[in-house]
Length: 150
Image (cartoon, rainbow, N blue to C red; front, side, top):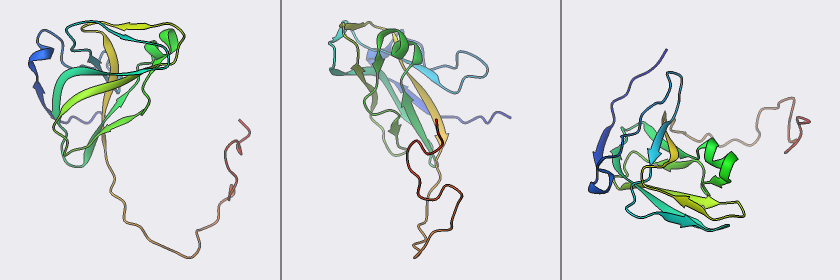
């Protein structure tokens, strides 16, 4: 079952003529974000550049928007995000800007309208801590990273 949620979005002048985020397939969880830049931005190897989307959103209370890397950019060009996933909280009203990092060996050029990241809107669970002297036991216990044998 698909849940529908209405989210207010405001287009800044820099995004005129670019598509709003949209699901590309019926089963997609994320919507593509596009670069709202006037001039190309070159990301040199092992550097980070902040790329504007020209969009502001009002995430409803009880939700967050997650900005995630695009797998095609990651696999083909080694372009990712240094803080993935990035969270847009329900009370943030500024422009969505995407920090892209070039993990490759060659410069990468971002052009106007390029799909640079994905946006996923998800529910947020608020936690109430129950401080205890001992936690319930599990089969795994205190075994750490790599314990599953993978």
